[in-house]
Image 1: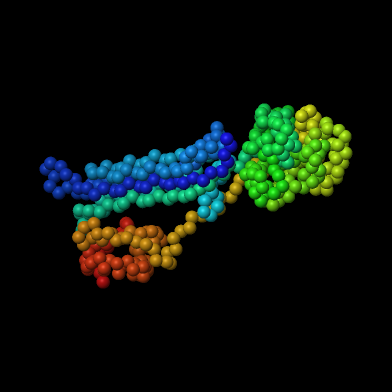
Image 2 (image 1 turned 30 degrees about the vertical axis):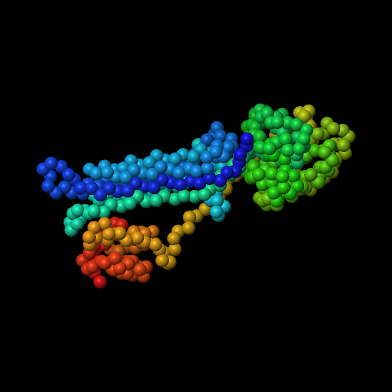
Length: 426
Protein backbone atom coordinates (compact mmCIF):
# COMPACT_ATOMS: atom_id res chain seq x y z
CA UNK A 1 0.00 0.00 0.00
CA UNK A 2 1.33 3.43 -0.95
CA UNK A 3 0.66 6.05 1.73
CA UNK A 4 1.87 9.59 1.08
CA UNK A 5 -0.04 11.76 3.56
CA UNK A 6 -0.70 11.23 7.27
CA UNK A 7 -1.51 13.29 10.35
CA UNK A 8 0.28 12.57 13.61
CA UNK A 9 0.84 14.08 17.06
CA UNK A 10 4.37 14.81 18.28
CA UNK A 11 5.44 16.03 21.73
CA UNK A 12 8.76 16.52 23.47
CA UNK A 13 9.43 15.13 26.94
CA UNK A 14 8.99 17.18 30.10
CA UNK A 15 12.05 18.00 32.17
CA UNK A 16 12.47 16.28 35.52
CA UNK A 17 11.91 18.23 38.75
CA UNK A 18 14.79 19.43 40.87
CA UNK A 19 15.12 17.85 44.31
CA UNK A 20 14.83 19.45 47.76
CA UNK A 21 17.25 17.61 50.03
CA UNK A 22 19.75 18.29 52.82
CA UNK A 23 22.93 16.40 53.50
CA UNK A 24 22.67 13.88 56.30
CA UNK A 25 25.71 12.01 57.60
CA UNK A 26 27.22 10.81 60.83
CA UNK A 27 29.06 13.55 62.70
CA UNK A 28 27.62 16.18 60.33
CA UNK A 29 25.40 18.44 62.40
CA UNK A 30 24.10 20.89 59.81
CA UNK A 31 24.39 19.46 56.32
CA UNK A 32 23.76 21.91 53.53
CA UNK A 33 21.33 21.60 50.63
CA UNK A 34 22.27 18.78 48.27
CA UNK A 35 19.21 18.41 46.01
CA UNK A 36 20.17 17.31 42.49
CA UNK A 37 18.92 18.66 39.16
CA UNK A 38 16.22 17.04 37.09
CA UNK A 39 17.12 15.49 33.75
CA UNK A 40 16.14 17.03 30.42
CA UNK A 41 13.18 15.67 28.48
CA UNK A 42 13.69 13.89 25.18
CA UNK A 43 13.82 15.75 21.86
CA UNK A 44 11.71 14.87 18.82
CA UNK A 45 14.05 14.26 15.87
CA UNK A 46 12.97 13.52 12.30
CA UNK A 47 15.44 11.33 10.39
CA UNK A 48 15.55 10.48 6.69
CA UNK A 49 15.58 6.74 6.00
CA UNK A 50 16.67 5.92 2.45
CA UNK A 51 15.07 2.48 2.71
CA UNK A 52 11.56 3.88 3.27
CA UNK A 53 9.39 4.56 0.23
CA UNK A 54 6.02 5.42 1.82
CA UNK A 55 4.49 6.69 5.05
CA UNK A 56 2.71 3.38 5.62
CA UNK A 57 4.19 2.90 9.10
CA UNK A 58 2.30 5.96 10.31
CA UNK A 59 -1.05 4.36 9.50
CA UNK A 60 -0.65 2.22 12.60
CA UNK A 61 0.99 4.68 14.98
CA UNK A 62 -0.22 8.27 15.16
CA UNK A 63 1.24 9.54 18.44
CA UNK A 64 4.94 10.13 19.12
CA UNK A 65 5.72 11.43 22.62
CA UNK A 66 9.27 11.56 23.95
CA UNK A 67 10.02 10.37 27.47
CA UNK A 68 10.22 12.74 30.42
CA UNK A 69 13.46 13.44 32.26
CA UNK A 70 13.94 11.82 35.67
CA UNK A 71 13.67 13.86 38.85
CA UNK A 72 16.79 14.88 40.72
CA UNK A 73 17.85 13.03 43.86
CA UNK A 74 19.64 13.67 47.11
CA UNK A 75 23.43 13.87 47.48
CA UNK A 76 23.56 16.12 44.41
CA UNK A 77 22.46 13.27 42.15
CA UNK A 78 21.08 14.57 38.87
CA UNK A 79 18.13 12.85 37.25
CA UNK A 80 18.74 10.96 34.02
CA UNK A 81 17.96 12.85 30.83
CA UNK A 82 15.46 11.10 28.59
CA UNK A 83 16.56 9.59 25.26
CA UNK A 84 15.62 11.45 22.10
CA UNK A 85 12.73 10.05 20.07
CA UNK A 86 13.74 9.53 16.44
CA UNK A 87 10.99 9.44 13.81
CA UNK A 88 12.09 7.93 10.50
CA UNK A 89 10.54 9.19 7.26
CA UNK A 90 11.27 8.73 3.53
CA UNK A 91 13.43 11.28 1.76
CA UNK A 92 11.22 14.00 0.29
CA UNK A 93 8.87 14.24 3.28
CA UNK A 94 7.51 17.64 4.28
CA UNK A 95 6.33 18.32 7.85
CA UNK A 96 3.47 20.83 8.10
CA UNK A 97 1.91 22.32 11.21
CA UNK A 98 -1.62 20.96 10.92
CA UNK A 99 -3.60 24.03 11.99
CA UNK A 100 -1.82 26.66 9.90
CA UNK A 101 -0.62 24.41 7.06
CA UNK A 102 2.79 26.06 7.19
CA UNK A 103 5.96 24.08 6.54
CA UNK A 104 8.06 23.25 9.60
CA UNK A 105 10.67 21.07 7.85
CA UNK A 106 11.54 19.84 4.37
CA UNK A 107 13.46 16.57 4.67
CA UNK A 108 14.89 16.28 1.19
CA UNK A 109 18.53 15.33 1.85
CA UNK A 110 19.95 11.84 2.32
CA UNK A 111 20.72 11.11 5.98
CA UNK A 112 19.19 14.40 7.16
CA UNK A 113 18.30 14.78 10.85
CA UNK A 114 16.14 17.64 12.12
CA UNK A 115 15.32 18.42 15.74
CA UNK A 116 11.74 19.60 15.53
CA UNK A 117 10.96 19.82 19.25
CA UNK A 118 13.43 20.33 22.10
CA UNK A 119 12.68 18.47 25.29
CA UNK A 120 11.88 20.45 28.42
CA UNK A 121 14.82 21.54 30.55
CA UNK A 122 15.28 19.83 33.88
CA UNK A 123 14.65 21.89 37.01
CA UNK A 124 17.51 22.84 39.33
CA UNK A 125 17.81 21.30 42.77
CA UNK A 126 17.89 23.34 45.97
CA UNK A 127 21.70 23.17 46.06
CA UNK A 128 21.67 26.07 43.58
CA UNK A 129 19.56 28.38 45.73
CA UNK A 130 21.62 28.62 48.90
CA UNK A 131 22.71 32.16 49.75
CA UNK A 132 24.48 33.75 52.70
CA UNK A 133 21.14 34.88 54.12
CA UNK A 134 19.19 31.70 53.24
CA UNK A 135 21.41 28.71 53.81
CA UNK A 136 18.64 26.08 53.89
CA UNK A 137 16.40 26.73 50.88
CA UNK A 138 13.40 24.43 50.72
CA UNK A 139 12.75 25.22 47.12
CA UNK A 140 13.72 23.58 43.81
CA UNK A 141 12.68 24.29 40.25
CA UNK A 142 10.08 22.20 38.51
CA UNK A 143 11.00 20.71 35.17
CA UNK A 144 9.94 22.68 32.10
CA UNK A 145 7.24 21.43 29.81
CA UNK A 146 8.06 20.81 26.17
CA UNK A 147 5.90 21.55 23.13
CA UNK A 148 3.35 19.42 21.32
CA UNK A 149 2.06 19.73 17.77
CA UNK A 150 -0.38 18.13 15.40
CA UNK A 151 1.55 17.80 12.14
CA UNK A 152 0.83 16.54 8.65
CA UNK A 153 3.49 14.51 6.87
CA UNK A 154 3.44 14.77 3.07
CA UNK A 155 5.65 12.70 0.81
CA UNK A 156 6.57 14.46 -2.42
CA UNK A 157 8.37 12.17 -4.85
CA UNK A 158 12.02 13.05 -5.48
CA UNK A 159 12.76 12.71 -9.19
CA UNK A 160 14.68 14.65 -11.83
CA UNK A 161 12.19 13.91 -14.60
CA UNK A 162 8.49 13.17 -14.25
CA UNK A 163 6.28 11.39 -16.76
CA UNK A 164 2.90 13.11 -16.92
CA UNK A 165 -0.13 12.56 -19.10
CA UNK A 166 -3.63 11.14 -19.14
CA UNK A 167 -4.15 7.53 -18.01
CA UNK A 168 -3.26 4.72 -20.39
CA UNK A 169 -0.98 6.73 -22.69
CA UNK A 170 2.06 4.52 -22.08
CA UNK A 171 3.94 6.18 -19.21
CA UNK A 172 4.51 2.96 -17.27
CA UNK A 173 5.64 1.19 -20.43
CA UNK A 174 8.10 3.99 -21.18
CA UNK A 175 9.49 3.82 -17.63
CA UNK A 176 9.98 0.07 -17.87
CA UNK A 177 11.83 0.38 -21.19
CA UNK A 178 14.44 2.95 -20.12
CA UNK A 179 15.00 2.01 -16.45
CA UNK A 180 15.17 -1.07 -14.24
CA UNK A 181 11.73 -0.32 -12.77
CA UNK A 182 8.98 -2.92 -13.12
CA UNK A 183 5.69 -1.04 -12.89
CA UNK A 184 2.37 -2.80 -13.28
CA UNK A 185 1.20 -2.39 -16.87
CA UNK A 186 -2.28 -3.08 -18.21
CA UNK A 187 -4.68 -1.68 -20.74
CA UNK A 188 -7.13 0.10 -18.46
CA UNK A 189 -7.44 3.42 -16.67
CA UNK A 190 -5.70 4.10 -13.37
CA UNK A 191 -3.34 1.13 -13.60
CA UNK A 192 -0.82 3.25 -11.69
CA UNK A 193 -2.04 4.24 -8.23
CA UNK A 194 1.34 5.31 -6.85
CA UNK A 195 4.48 6.88 -8.33
CA UNK A 196 7.06 4.45 -9.71
CA UNK A 197 10.71 5.50 -9.83
CA UNK A 198 13.59 4.21 -11.90
CA UNK A 199 17.12 5.30 -12.74
CA UNK A 200 18.02 6.10 -16.35
CA UNK A 201 21.58 4.86 -16.63
CA UNK A 202 24.66 5.87 -18.60
CA UNK A 203 23.28 5.09 -22.05
CA UNK A 204 22.05 8.67 -22.15
CA UNK A 205 24.80 10.41 -20.18
CA UNK A 206 24.92 10.73 -16.41
CA UNK A 207 22.31 8.90 -14.37
CA UNK A 208 19.05 10.63 -13.48
CA UNK A 209 15.86 9.59 -11.70
CA UNK A 210 12.71 9.16 -13.77
CA UNK A 211 9.26 8.92 -12.14
CA UNK A 212 5.99 7.68 -13.56
CA UNK A 213 3.51 10.09 -12.00
CA UNK A 214 0.02 8.53 -11.65
CA UNK A 215 -2.37 9.48 -14.45
CA UNK A 216 -4.19 12.76 -14.18
CA UNK A 217 -7.76 13.45 -15.26
CA UNK A 218 -9.62 16.62 -16.00
CA UNK A 219 -10.54 18.39 -12.75
CA UNK A 220 -7.74 16.76 -10.73
CA UNK A 221 -6.64 20.13 -9.34
CA UNK A 222 -10.13 20.50 -7.87
CA UNK A 223 -10.13 17.03 -6.36
CA UNK A 224 -11.50 14.88 -9.17
CA UNK A 225 -10.20 11.33 -9.17
CA UNK A 226 -7.30 11.23 -6.74
CA UNK A 227 -6.83 14.95 -7.37
CA UNK A 228 -4.01 16.60 -5.50
CA UNK A 229 -2.82 13.18 -4.30
CA UNK A 230 -1.39 12.80 -7.80
CA UNK A 231 -0.29 16.38 -8.35
CA UNK A 232 1.68 16.45 -5.09
CA UNK A 233 4.30 14.19 -6.62
CA UNK A 234 5.25 16.49 -9.48
CA UNK A 235 6.19 19.42 -7.25
CA UNK A 236 9.86 18.43 -6.86
CA UNK A 237 10.28 17.32 -10.48
CA UNK A 238 12.70 19.45 -12.51
CA UNK A 239 11.57 18.45 -16.00
CA UNK A 240 8.33 16.97 -17.37
CA UNK A 241 8.04 14.46 -20.17
CA UNK A 242 4.46 14.85 -21.29
CA UNK A 243 3.40 11.52 -22.81
CA UNK A 244 0.50 11.76 -25.24
CA UNK A 245 -1.31 9.10 -27.24
CA UNK A 246 -0.52 10.28 -30.78
CA UNK A 247 -2.82 7.64 -32.27
CA UNK A 248 -5.81 8.80 -30.18
CA UNK A 249 -6.51 5.14 -29.46
CA UNK A 250 -8.65 6.13 -26.46
CA UNK A 251 -10.69 8.54 -28.55
CA UNK A 252 -9.07 11.67 -27.06
CA UNK A 253 -7.55 14.21 -29.43
CA UNK A 254 -3.80 14.49 -28.60
CA UNK A 255 -3.77 18.30 -28.55
CA UNK A 256 -6.83 18.36 -26.29
CA UNK A 257 -5.10 15.88 -23.99
CA UNK A 258 -2.02 18.13 -23.72
CA UNK A 259 -4.19 21.15 -22.95
CA UNK A 260 -6.16 19.32 -20.25
CA UNK A 261 -3.07 18.19 -18.35
CA UNK A 262 -1.40 21.59 -18.52
CA UNK A 263 -4.59 23.26 -17.32
CA UNK A 264 -4.50 21.04 -14.24
CA UNK A 265 -0.85 21.95 -13.62
CA UNK A 266 -1.64 25.67 -13.85
CA UNK A 267 -4.67 25.38 -11.58
CA UNK A 268 -2.64 23.48 -8.99
CA UNK A 269 0.43 25.71 -9.09
CA UNK A 270 1.61 28.33 -11.57
CA UNK A 271 5.18 27.29 -10.78
CA UNK A 272 4.52 23.85 -12.23
CA UNK A 273 3.36 25.33 -15.51
CA UNK A 274 6.74 27.05 -15.87
CA UNK A 275 8.77 23.84 -15.57
CA UNK A 276 10.59 22.69 -18.74
CA UNK A 277 8.45 20.27 -20.71
CA UNK A 278 9.12 17.77 -23.49
CA UNK A 279 6.26 16.15 -25.38
CA UNK A 280 6.59 12.45 -26.21
CA UNK A 281 4.16 11.54 -29.01
CA UNK A 282 3.72 7.88 -28.13
CA UNK A 283 2.18 4.93 -30.00
CA UNK A 284 3.65 6.03 -33.33
CA UNK A 285 3.58 2.39 -34.41
CA UNK A 286 -0.22 2.58 -34.62
CA UNK A 287 -0.81 3.71 -38.18
CA UNK A 288 -2.18 5.72 -39.89
CA UNK A 289 -3.76 7.74 -37.05
CA UNK A 290 -0.47 8.59 -35.34
CA UNK A 291 1.10 9.95 -38.53
CA UNK A 292 -1.98 12.07 -39.19
CA UNK A 293 -1.96 13.58 -35.68
CA UNK A 294 1.80 14.20 -35.39
CA UNK A 295 1.90 17.44 -37.49
CA UNK A 296 -0.74 19.19 -35.37
CA UNK A 297 0.99 18.05 -32.16
CA UNK A 298 4.24 19.57 -33.41
CA UNK A 299 2.50 22.79 -34.49
CA UNK A 300 0.88 23.19 -31.07
CA UNK A 301 4.11 22.46 -29.16
CA UNK A 302 6.47 24.51 -31.33
CA UNK A 303 4.36 27.59 -30.61
CA UNK A 304 5.23 27.04 -26.93
CA UNK A 305 8.91 26.16 -27.51
CA UNK A 306 8.35 22.56 -26.43
CA UNK A 307 10.39 19.84 -28.10
CA UNK A 308 8.40 16.95 -29.61
CA UNK A 309 9.73 13.39 -29.98
CA UNK A 310 7.89 10.72 -31.92
CA UNK A 311 8.27 7.45 -30.03
CA UNK A 312 6.87 3.99 -29.51
CA UNK A 313 7.45 2.97 -25.90
CA UNK A 314 6.31 -0.60 -26.51
CA UNK A 315 8.49 -0.88 -29.61
CA UNK A 316 11.51 0.92 -28.06
CA UNK A 317 11.58 3.45 -30.91
CA UNK A 318 12.95 6.99 -30.44
CA UNK A 319 13.72 6.52 -26.74
CA UNK A 320 17.44 7.36 -26.89
CA UNK A 321 16.83 10.83 -28.33
CA UNK A 322 14.01 11.50 -25.85
CA UNK A 323 16.10 10.56 -22.79
CA UNK A 324 19.11 12.49 -24.08
CA UNK A 325 17.00 15.66 -24.44
CA UNK A 326 15.53 15.16 -20.96
CA UNK A 327 19.00 14.75 -19.45
CA UNK A 328 20.20 17.95 -21.13
CA UNK A 329 17.31 19.90 -19.61
CA UNK A 330 17.94 18.39 -16.16
CA UNK A 331 21.54 19.65 -16.20
CA UNK A 332 20.28 23.18 -16.85
CA UNK A 333 18.01 23.17 -13.79
CA UNK A 334 18.83 23.95 -10.13
CA UNK A 335 20.27 21.09 -8.10
CA UNK A 336 17.30 20.56 -5.80
CA UNK A 337 13.74 21.80 -5.59
CA UNK A 338 13.04 22.44 -1.92
CA UNK A 339 10.21 24.12 -0.06
CA UNK A 340 10.76 27.15 2.12
CA UNK A 341 10.11 26.54 5.79
CA UNK A 342 7.66 29.24 6.77
CA UNK A 343 6.36 28.14 10.15
CA UNK A 344 7.23 30.65 12.86
CA UNK A 345 6.14 29.96 16.40
CA UNK A 346 3.98 32.72 17.78
CA UNK A 347 5.51 34.20 20.92
CA UNK A 348 3.33 35.32 23.81
CA UNK A 349 2.26 38.97 23.69
CA UNK A 350 3.89 40.53 26.72
CA UNK A 351 1.67 43.60 26.37
CA UNK A 352 -1.23 41.44 27.51
CA UNK A 353 -1.64 40.00 30.97
CA UNK A 354 0.59 36.93 31.05
CA UNK A 355 -0.29 34.07 33.42
CA UNK A 356 1.89 33.55 36.47
CA UNK A 357 1.94 31.39 39.57
CA UNK A 358 3.00 32.18 43.13
CA UNK A 359 3.99 29.43 45.54
CA UNK A 360 5.14 29.56 49.18
CA UNK A 361 7.55 26.64 49.74
CA UNK A 362 8.40 27.87 53.25
CA UNK A 363 7.45 30.65 55.62
CA UNK A 364 8.35 34.18 54.48
CA UNK A 365 9.54 32.83 51.09
CA UNK A 366 7.59 33.40 47.86
CA UNK A 367 8.36 32.00 44.41
CA UNK A 368 6.98 33.65 41.25
CA UNK A 369 6.97 31.81 37.91
CA UNK A 370 5.36 32.39 34.52
CA UNK A 371 6.11 32.68 30.81
CA UNK A 372 5.75 36.45 30.70
CA UNK A 373 7.87 37.01 33.80
CA UNK A 374 10.65 34.78 32.52
CA UNK A 375 10.74 36.48 29.12
CA UNK A 376 10.72 39.92 30.73
CA UNK A 377 13.78 38.93 32.75
CA UNK A 378 15.41 37.76 29.54
CA UNK A 379 15.54 41.19 27.97
CA UNK A 380 15.59 43.47 31.02
CA UNK A 381 18.87 44.42 32.69
CA UNK A 382 17.74 44.80 36.28
CA UNK A 383 21.30 45.64 37.34
CA UNK A 384 20.71 49.18 36.07
CA UNK A 385 18.49 51.69 37.84
CA UNK A 386 16.32 52.16 34.77
CA UNK A 387 15.98 48.43 34.14
CA UNK A 388 15.12 47.75 37.78
CA UNK A 389 12.43 50.43 37.75
CA UNK A 390 11.00 49.02 34.51
CA UNK A 391 10.82 45.53 35.99
CA UNK A 392 9.19 46.78 39.20
CA UNK A 393 6.58 48.55 37.09
CA UNK A 394 5.97 45.35 35.14
CA UNK A 395 5.35 43.41 38.37
CA UNK A 396 2.89 46.04 39.51
CA UNK A 397 1.07 46.43 36.18
CA UNK A 398 0.60 42.66 35.76
CA UNK A 399 -0.91 42.30 39.23
CA UNK A 400 1.97 40.25 40.62
CA UNK A 401 2.57 42.63 43.53
CA UNK A 402 -1.14 42.66 44.35
CA UNK A 403 -1.25 38.86 44.28
CA UNK A 404 1.77 38.66 46.59
CA UNK A 405 0.06 41.00 49.05
CA UNK A 406 -3.10 38.87 48.86
CA UNK A 407 -1.06 35.83 49.82
CA UNK A 408 0.22 37.66 52.91
CA UNK A 409 3.68 38.87 51.97
CA UNK A 410 5.25 41.21 54.54
CA UNK A 411 8.15 43.60 54.48
CA UNK A 412 11.43 41.73 54.70
CA UNK A 413 10.03 38.53 53.14
CA UNK A 414 12.03 37.02 50.29
CA UNK A 415 10.76 36.78 46.69
CA UNK A 416 12.48 34.53 44.13
CA UNK A 417 11.80 35.00 40.42
CA UNK A 418 13.86 32.41 38.56
CA UNK A 419 17.52 33.46 38.96
CA UNK A 420 16.95 36.58 41.08
CA UNK A 421 16.07 36.87 44.74
CA UNK A 422 15.16 40.06 46.62
CA UNK A 423 13.55 41.27 49.82
CA UNK A 424 10.08 42.75 49.59
CA UNK A 425 9.54 46.37 50.66
CA UNK A 426 6.45 48.50 50.11
